[in-house]
Length: 457
Image (cartoon, rainbow, N blue to C red):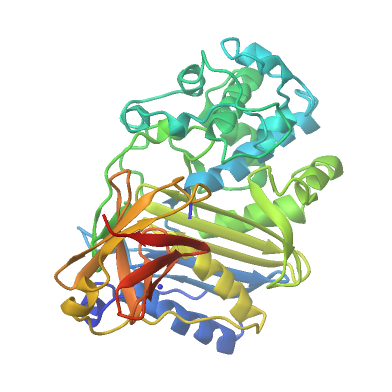
């Protein structure tokens, strides 16, 4: 499940520590000021620590760093801080594969059965199916032992082996079920086989080097204390932050192991959509609107911006990322954060709206909480089969001046109070609203577009 604000006592946690406006082209100071003012509540409540960038028609509109890359040593984030970008890594893996296609090393319609000898029906999967996440492969992230997999060094080959012995979930190319992490593990393996190099070296030679991305790479657990690489943090309760649990990034090869800077990401977007990184045919494959998911991007009509939009987001322990490209205005928005929260997606869309003088909603947390009022919100709520966790029974639990949402999986999402009975899930940055009956008892829980009904057991 991939997916706003906090009470006043949290304001001391998040302070603006470092801000650098881009030099060179003079930005629109009015727009830049509005963007900075918009971001401050996120920063001051500990829900954004990172760098935001907005470019329009080749001109810098805004670029600024906030918070710490290392909270323990009080090292501030900078414009050139490197961030793990989670699922945004898929953009890079896909572009590298397309460059091999352009070089004639592989074909989009090549079968991949030779790489998946232990999977029934693998001979039906094409490279194109992998790139558009319509392969039908069982997802490694759904394995019950996935948390253990993240604690051990992996390779693309060892990750692909984890799904051997399984059958396809559906006929390749027929549907999109969920983000196919295993498909991009396999694409990483294909890059290794085609170049006869390890995945990090292959990515450097095929993509990062030719694209001029000097601060980007793939984490295969050998980086050590790389300079200017942010440490990841995760929410602790409604108002705190703590160091994220460590993982082996090699366990996300192809789908989540890349790191980069906002400047490199913007350079990549320019090269991908407007430059000569790919041939016209490969670029057109990315620009197509169907299927909606493909080549590391979501793409399709946006009612908010009245045009085709291309975006990608990611979230992995300690980090969250978002990138958006709007072709009509050549608008690029990048938001990287070393806080494990999906707020970056909401922020990114709003920054685009500010840059285009469109409506947006500012983030304002309630500055007071009433423990008795929060306790009156508690209860269990039954959701349907179409929910993120099908047929989940979600509990709202109050502890002092904090309210949390508890998932059947055992995960806990702190809820930030906006106003009476209105919250935001701090982890997934989803709107949460409680509906009461005539006697004031909880009746329904609205979680984004989903509605759960209160149970009395």
